[in-house]
Image 1: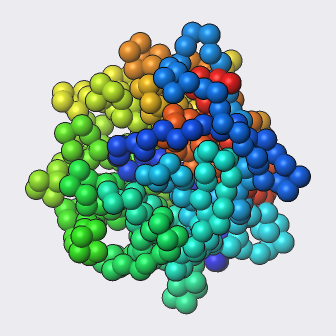
Image 2: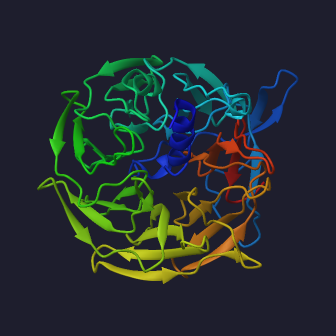
Length: 432
């Protein structure tokens, strides 16, 4: 496999990664004033304070949820990360630039750049660049408000070693107060497409991912922000790449899904739990048959909602109770029998009112549908569709209860090229 094909393969794998679920909920920042934004001739936006009352409910029977375009990103990118900071802004890092150049035989470019989204102004601004380009990396908000970024694919190293794919060992920390990046100690093993999860004690668990060529790991490491060092921890029961992980209410880490890469990649349906006290992984019951997970979310009642699909691409969702280790099926939305949140690429986030927003990928150039899951009734209801057709976008909850979807890629029908997207849009659960 040549370098361009290797990058194409890696891009497809990274499209499976859901950064929105890579870190557990942290005490949300105090809600900032919500602004309504409108485009200006410069391409930026002007903002005016919203008239929404501070005590307004997040949902009502008469409200209509909406998506609205917000300021254009500094750079079009896909395979990036998005992290909501303690001050309410969103940090976007790395990824790849437009892949349309593949039609001419050129490879996409990995990005070291980073940018910040201000939800009050609806504007993106450039911030300090990372020390190296990163694609397929992880980003984790630390308790002190800084952000740890680790790993990612390293195509230059792959070229130098004469292998298909290589991964970075390096890590660095972003300080929102200065906009600067500081290199920290490196991981013991290079990895990309891994999962990074913030533990209740402030350490970061990094598990799984790809190393080089088609190797998938089960190894895991712990980052201690106090000593800025990494230590090895227990190995996963199953090696997996682009899996989903989430912190349970009792502090354990639940991991499910992902892919095992060999001559023929296969999805991993198995689930397991990491015990921080003993630094070990234990197997737990697998999801119901034929449910291949592409997104997870923690519900207010402490259950885990797993959003996925069958091998045939039909939507399938299930609920996991960590206390009883029991799985139950939950309804999956369809339109005229066609899947709407199925597929290997989906995004989920738990809203402030406890509902879960799920968004899939675009199909044949049409904007993806969005759905809301109600844990009380275990039912799905359709909400407004995205305004722009995109796949693999990053989705994060904002401090004011809205949801930001940024970047991603677009695969036009009848072409071989994917194009990275530089637009972003915001979902308002209570409508305008």
